[in-house]
Length: 208
Ligand SMILES: [Zn+2]
Image (cartoon, rainbow, N blue to C red; front, side, top):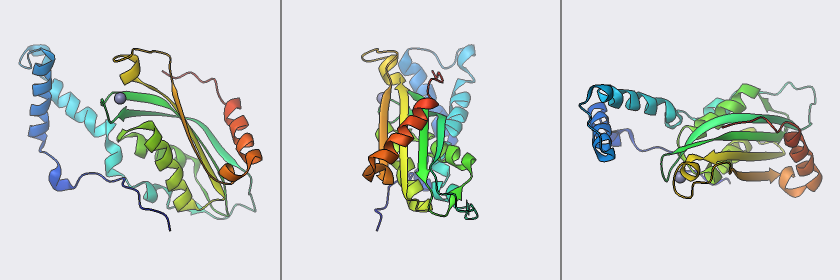
């Protein structure tokens, strides 16, 4: 009933060797105009390749598995659950430049809830891939909806894109806000307002 999302990574066979990755970084260093053989840059390809393991670790994780463990003993708790200000670091798929921001997630449980650290991990799995913010917002919301099957899901993401602040139009201080409302949050204006009020109360935490 739900359409399958293409969250998936290239097949393992398409992955280059580590040596190929190191050599690609050396090429980019030369492209930037520097000499990969000078002392200060000798270790750089290795550091960059290791950073990539961290920046893009989301390709190796299954978001559905993270949410698989739910708790059904919630004593009839059926009010909105909101987690504010989940900071994330991602990279835009157009420039591979950092996207830094925060996500706010709300859902109206339908018997099952998930541990709160799982919501933060869900954000990270999608953040640690090449992204566009709109797509990431949808992926977070749709995965929650699909796995938990709550009465509704709301996700708001606000982020600064370094491809806009440090290059191109050079507009520091701008943030992009995206949202995805499903179920009760989409249909019921009161529920949506309650969520937006709850995330506004938590707002004001600075992020860079
Ligand atoms: Zn970009």
